[in-house]
Image 1 (cartoon, protein in one colour):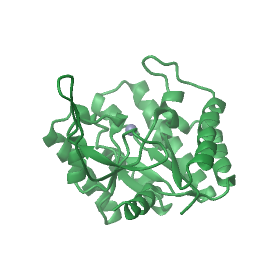
Image 2 (cartoon, rainbow, N blue to C red; image 1 turned 135 degrees about the horizontal axis):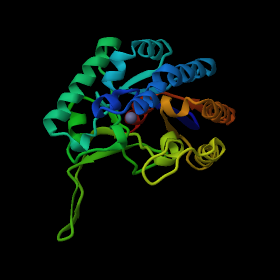
Image 3 (tube, protein in one colour; image 1 turned 45 degrees about the vertical axis):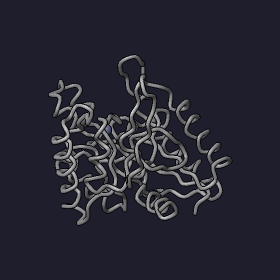
Amino acid sequence: MPRLTVAITVDHDAISDSVRRGDSPVKFSHAEFGPRVGAKRILALLAARGVPTTWFVPGHTLTTFTDDTEVILAGGHELACHGWFHEDFAELSDEDAAAVLARSVEAVRAVTGAAPIGFRAPYWSLGPATLGLVEAAGFAYDSSLMANDYDLYRVRHGDRHSTADGTAWGREGSLVEVPVYWAMDDWPHFEPGPGRSGLAAPSSVLEIWTEELRYAHENAPGGLVMVTIHPECIGRGHRMAMLERFIDTAAALDGVAFERLDAVVSRWAGAHP
Ligand SMILES: [Zn+2]
């Protein structure tokens, strides 16, 4: 087992969200930068460094930007699910959520020959029943929750909380959680949004990400540091330079391995039956 595993995960949203929302031409063009420029740069960097990664790809992106899908697979990366049109699962009925999951699984199966094992909710937004549906759809892991940082855990279903009766914990199922966190995601740092300016200096984000590397390397042996990146966001040159530095800093630490999430999850699940 590596002393520290580093997982780079890429949410290749492209224009899926803009199609669903009917965005303006400028917003569409911001999203189009992902498949047109960003994903190509990221895939070239990963190939040059020999880094395997996991790509969470909405079905619309997978079937529209098939050139990216081919390079992702040829590069030895993992394809995982991220909705079809980047839906907010908290807003979907159970029937609609199950249908989106099933359609997404089939789209991956059509290009890889096997069902995907990973799911990440767009916006990390889940309804109370979503992860039960994800588990029922056959996924082995989710990556949308935050109850740990360097270690995986099993998702509980059916937690009940009320001010009258307090908390009754639900039961763990088979679904494994690979936890996320905002500070380890490029988007909140770099993209303008409600309540934030975005457009941070890459040096400030590099400081956060490399301090996570150093802390986990020292204090969480066998742990995982995962980052989430978006081609339309990190694909700009000054941020690509930061991603290069992050990869090189990680690679220089003793006992670090870059791994796909399916490999991380399968090792963890084997040790936690
Ligand atoms: Zn996304």
